[in-house]
Length: 227
Image (tube, rainbow, N blue to C red):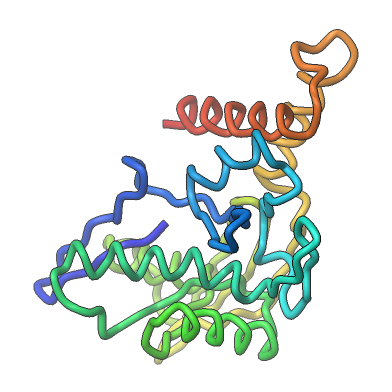
């Protein structure tokens, strides 16, 4: 998700393909272009060998996609570039202040990698905010009482899962410990549901393309039920 914040303090989520969220999947088209969002998922149904569902999980790696060597950095930058274009189109002028939320468990190497991806996408130097710190700051902004010295446990369940313990200090929040499992979030739920539907007695026995199409439907249904 991406949010555009205005100088007066108001904010609004950016829209992609009519939705307030942009899938991180990328599709390498035969002409070399990188398709993002729903277009990437649509391409997966017909040419699954060109589909990369989670580029961010392969940092600093050279990937072979349909016989073509691509960098994971370029795949992530493609998604960030689309966010930058939509933000500029909505605001009407270039974006000068960028903040990217990253997992608390990321070390300096992966954080530098994400900065490089933002630079390649044409964004200004971003400020990286740890996800649990962003949550805690949001709670403060909403009026939740978190006195200095108090502790907060943040359970962040997205595609994966990350649980962090924070302490509020005099100048902000400090992450004391974090435990992450990339296979314990919604991506695992999507895979389990898809496996159930494509298993023996399931509704789909087609190839990989049909499996990705079914996975997209599973995600859409799950998000609709969540809302």
